[in-house]
Image 1 (cartoon, rainbow over the protein chains, first blue to last red):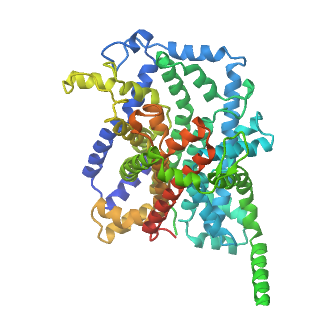
Image 2 (image 1 turned 30 degrees about the vertical axis):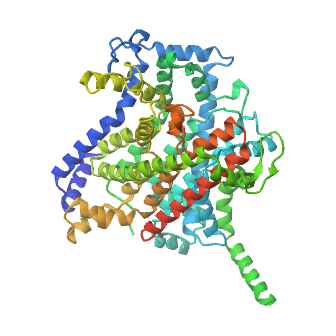
Length: 292
Length: 304
């Protein structure tokens, strides 16, 4: 955000008749609520750098006297005792996360555009099915999914971690809702110019949907980053970071420090992606929107 | 008659052929969606009418799962009550919070927007059950207990996670805390998309306060995002179960935090009675579907 942009925003706020007092009040309300929200996260971070002696003193302290990285070292140490090197888990997780995120965003964007803006036999039904798929939550589905995957010989295959997450009804629904707000006139104009649906989608619609697309990237990344091997792959060389880290941290409250370190460690990549995506949206869209 | 049917079929076929490019663009998503979502859902629907233990093939038992649920399963009736209390307390409150916070954040300077959005969203990214267990821990070492003892508000530590009186309350607090998730972020994106010149035009037409802006400009242009957030909220508040299971254990004292989803988990993964679990989930789905139709009707004037 440049100085000129800030000035433009201020001018726009003035034209809209906004007062600075209201903004300050909003800031204060949000800060108070925000404190409550970050407190557990703050405690998690503090506890991840507490040495063992400090973890269980009475009364529990909200700060750390002599911070240490022992918990993180412990976590890496116990992951290292597995048969495959740590870098292998990182590689697996990055491969799964990148492919799921990219494919999910590309496929959901195209399908969402068609469902939001085109009328064709079956379009109403499909729009309805997406919402039903979101609402139908059942643990029996996992068993059926498992049966489908074993029929496709996907069990113990690294693809088992990627393929089921590619088509996310939530991502499609998010994009569909957002695209439906675009004025039809923009799309009609492009059609008159002779552009095909594929070109309209990628050159006109999606570039105009950056806030929704960035939000989808955040969701997709976050979900994909946390994909666990579960009962889908058994070979250690195909397992992902969350599986390895959870194993390291799961020995009850005595290992609370390591569990905290694991939580902090796993949180870093999604937070970075979140910051990049949000900043990109906010700073490019600060004073423009879709114009009719 | 036959003729008319034929011409209708021909017209439909022509429509389908004309929409070829639509189907092509849908295909990549739909292939994966059908294999990994539709097929499993369609396969699991009839399981509710069977006795299925995952070892022997399903045996058809008619409606007996449903009659057992409503007539002799006292824990299920209790779980309906817990779910409804839980959903009606957390759902609307969290929906309101998502909307108001997303709106308030939108009024701030861009740098602060990113910061505050992160602060409110980060709980739904983190794995935080361990820290909440330490906060609500029942001995004097628990953060909350030690804090309240210091202030002199209580004389002996409270068993937050095992005392039947507090379990539901504690679960609701933690659920609310992690609930500013998908809906919140979608609403943030929606606000970001509102054309700023609308606000300026509003000021010219006599809109004086931010409150009026909200009613006359913001809400009418946010219909689709409001619907998305509502569906997300329904899903998270009706299917909540993981929070309770991770926090107060399973089963919780006196089934105080036993939701329908926990009940389905019990029969599915603990007792391996999949037919019964499927019947439970189908009932839950009907609840959620009715809810989403009602909200859709309320919001329909703002959506297409």
